[in-house]
Length: 264
Image: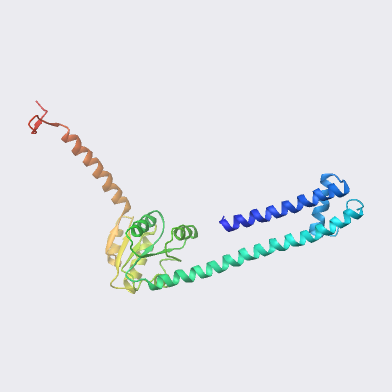
């Protein structure tokens, strides 16, 4: 829930609670009614449902009822005004925000198009942002789109396998495209489309299935990255480094600074 929505909700609840409390207390003081009767009379008066009074009203009670009616009309009008303003502001913000983002994307040149803002795509975008490299994200999942927009990234919502969406992200002017969707087939299709639209573009594609690397290269990818293979290589490197450290522990440095073998 946004800050504006939260403030509006608190305002509406506060006005309604204040009006109900004002009416209930008023009937309690002017007529001496029980609290529940006063609350019921307040509700039917504000709602203008046309029910008859709970009990006969005195002169003071009738005057207070008229005041309560006018107060209820004012409060309801204020609530309606604030709600309408919130809806209109949200609509204008979405329209203007979308146009502003489109203009920013249209001005980009030699940028990167990142297809997918999942676990890998978000890491890629974070590193590009840290390096001050221009990029545009293509993502069709609304939750991922909102997450990217909250970080201030340029986002095109849509299917990255669509030529129209790729062009909307400025792929003709892009330096490279990074296809990191979960589907190898989608990354393959993006590689084909990107190479066809921009023959000079650099294509980096994610591949998971065995044998997909050659297919992605034939489709136009310049670099194929397998997260599973990279993870395995990193683990193996850690193991080998630990093994090397263990071997070095078999040696000690002598008084003169020369290493000597601890083995007899």
